[in-house]
Length: 61
Image 1 (tube, one colour):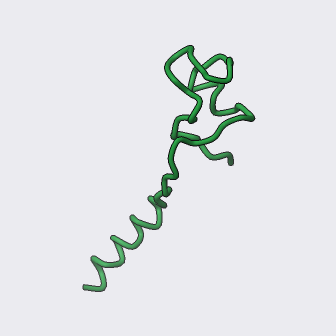
Image 2: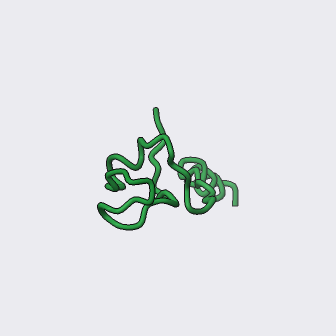
């Protein structure tokens, strides 16, 4: 399963505007662009792990 790139590319300016001269539509082309570089490093949260830990803490305490 591929990861969904929710963080915009650093070359993405606005809808239809890209510094690299590409078709800048973040929901389609920018995610598959070979020149994709995220603007900022964002730590991905493992929601399944977070939920399981929350459920365990309810039964242990």
